[in-house]
Length: 154
Image 1 (cartoon, rainbow, N blue to C red):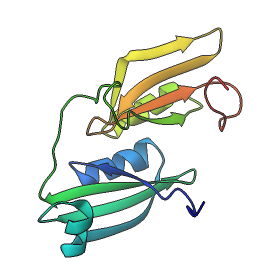
Image 2: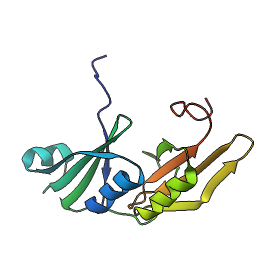
Image 3: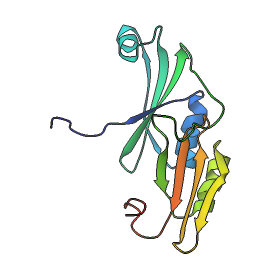
């Protein structure tokens, strides 16, 4: 197969500074690169016109996310978290060692903890909750024993 590697995951945001702060300060991503994007090549690639946006790339644990903030033509937004059964990307998941501390960091950095989703299972020493970024993208926080690189339930 000629695919070399996974490059990044793009997330459209309404406020680039707020989202950068959330992913950096709340989730521990490092800012890698920032750049403006506009012109006919961007319009053709993104199938939008006119196109003018700013992009920030962040990385954590080898995963790169690209935050896209559209000055033109603007962004479409919904205030509520995306339903889990809507076709497409449902969530990002992160393993954590201290769920309560991360939930506090989420709220401090502009995110929202969906407290009604919090589930704690003392028999398995596992706890999980959904939070959202400033624009409502769901992020699953999972605290569980064992290798943090293993999949849940594996």
